[in-house]
Image (cartoon, rainbow, N blue to C red; front, side, top):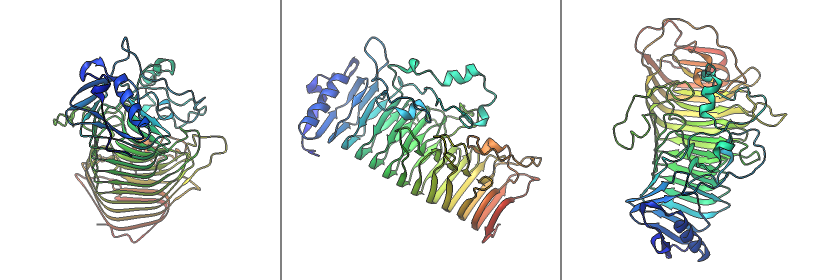
Length: 478
């Protein structure tokens, strides 16, 4: 990249007033930098109103401190690029299947960057979009949504026609290589603040995201690093790895490192303003606020060599590792994780058989997961740490070492044996209150436990640990 060439968007006609539409001027500067063989497109301090911008190869978009790229409201000034016509997306929802309908998007680009210490204001982006038209529909939505009316679900899932001209992501990348995004703040990012699909050699660092749905979605990425990021996402996942069929083929998520990140479920906007609000208790899926790190739910492809280290969860659901659409999850290492005020289970490993994919899709596998050093407090007492496979498909080779879990209370009854629910959407609440208060494992082979410390407030009639069709060794519970 020719980083010595700089293109000031004001010389291309941008005003930075926040009133005039500056998107065409910014795109002109991007095109000029690309034509010159590469360069930096600079947004000096100001407010730059824009619809969709396409980032091109060898271009760095520098949103400088004091500069804000503002997502424009569709209407008389214009609209966002239309979602690509990619045919029927039978196994993936609208948000994960399109990139062009975003504030910033790139496709088949290389050596690109977005950085500079500035801000993206995505208040005009929508969090909505239609779900997948997958015919069976089993496991399409969490069981916690089962009581919602058709009208209530429709409020969350607009039709494709209703999405025309709307933007629903702040940044979306498809089939890109060598990408660096750092030192930015995203205030409300739509359906997904940052979506990367089949991106290779991706670096995300020191991002601050406070949003209304998903924060960072890494879908079939390879060689990716997420470091020093803060993501507040009360309504959905904060940092999530996926292997969907959004790009029309089965692909893997490999060699991903998530380090020194903080994920939270405070009221939207209150991480950025420093008030850390707690008025919202329930997410749109009718479960408690989300804001976690997760592998899955979309899991058509495999996950390999994933590391989560030195991360903190606050007022959020716990760590989730889920394969339900046929993919294999293996070689996952979690270390040095702390959690406070866990809104469901602190740890949830689920191998299921939703099988949202082409005919003939079969259950995948989860194996080779090591949790070394996890401390969680303020856990919802209904939901124990859970490791659950299904009959004939056990989770294999899981190590829990130096794990301390403290539950905020107790329940006064012993639930019935939970149903298998093999084809259900995976969430800790899917089984109801857990049959043990500390750790529950079912259909697990090769569970090795060393240094598991379980404690709670109050008396609870459930057993501390329950193993159903599970083999455990090295146990030294305290």
